[in-house]
Length: 186
Image (tube, rainbow, N blue to C red; front, side, top):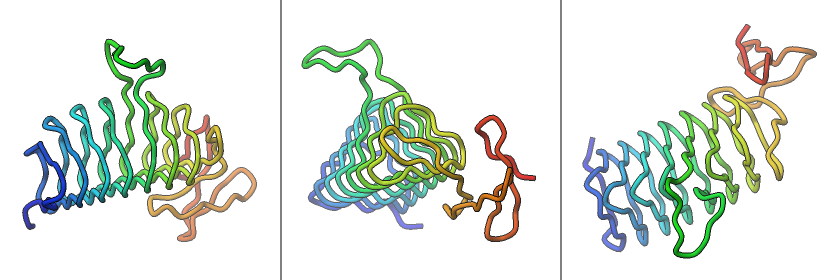
């Protein structure tokens, strides 16, 4: 695998970037940020210090990642997604600690969604464009709205599962049920 590729018009202050990662122009990455292998960080992004990004992550243009965010492997973050990390922000007044937000493996967040600090977006969950995430999202959940609500379920590929009574079916024939807001394979 090739070494990381950093566009000369970006300001990358960290050396913690994995092989195969591409950083595009006008992106700023602060010194303590940790970025995995084979990521694609598009133009006009900002990444603070207390950030951990896994492998095979795509971050589209216009995304700012503030201290306290962990992004696991194979996550997609659409253009202009907004994250927060302080529930009561004031100019020149900093909290003792910033809220921790976790985006788990395989999750996808659509364009212009807003993710409030402290939320956990579960494995392979799908957040629709423009949604407002105010609380944790279960694994495999498809959420949309303001605030975001579970409206369905998806598989690892992001394909919507089809409801059939108390069960949900994948296109490949797998069968699931939902118990206590968790998707369970039958």
